[in-house]
Amino acid sequence: MTKLGYQIPNFSYPGVAVDRIFPTVVQQAKEAEAGGFDTVLVMDHFYQLPALGDPDEPMIECYVLLSALAQHTTRVRLSALVTGNTYRNPTLLAKEITALDVVSGGRAQLGIGAGWYELEHDSLGYEFDTFTDRFERLEEALQIILPMLRGERPTFQGKRYQVRDAINSPAPLRPIPVMIGGGGVHKTLRMVAQYADESNLICAKDELPAKLAALDEHCERLGRDRAQITVSYQTSACIAPTREQAQREFDDYLERTPRAQTRAASVIVGSSDEVAAAYADLLAIGIDGITVNAPANGHLPGRVQLLGETLAPLIG
Image (cartoon, rainbow, N blue to C red):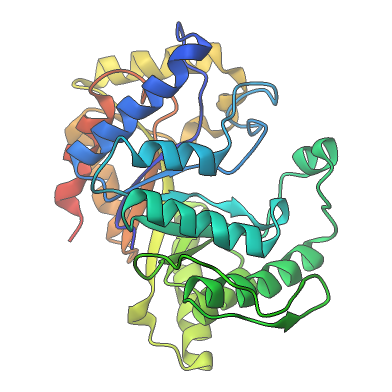
């Protein structure tokens, strides 16, 4: 499972034309692998998120992109962080994850969540429904996807989805790890305890102890061994050889991406020593791993590898 994951959340890079976007993404994935990251992840969105840019900024469909990155990497697992369940029929998603596993030589990981970006749904014609409806749909989908990934032929009659003797051939080359993203203590973490191998939390740092305690309680109630579940925490960083250089690169990013001001305070900015100290404090709270993105300067040569080499020694 993901102990140290590098997420690529944006495809808007200063001075980079459209025909150079993919080579810039490949560069980041290769550096992540060389720097010690165990997983490379991309967002499953069609519009850029409000805190990262404008809706019409470039976004590449995640499973096409992950399959392409499989041809440029050899070791890292490949995953969405996370798949919006509302965007695909569960049988299609099972086939896409399996295809990614086959073309990557057994490196696919399923990251999934209920979906939340209302503008994207409304604009592109995806049914959004209520919060409760989306989580009911996610739970039904998991009861179809997970058996298909195990090589079974599920038959399922639910409120949202119906399948009969659903075939998934070829089967994945290896068991597919399952990550559920989100931090809801009642629904999301209960589903983690029931269905998943990993929880990826997005929340304020001071909320982590309560989230971990809630997951423990769900595991105890469901009879699940908590030690079987990896808990990773989503973060953002801007690293450079010196503090001054990192701050300058982060300031440049905020100037060209005004929307990012809303989350600037949560980004870890600094030299290798400063970034390592900040992540050591996070890990001390009790999480098992971290996922990190670098929208400010991940496109600059050497930054992702430096980030991996800084953080990998912290992960047991």
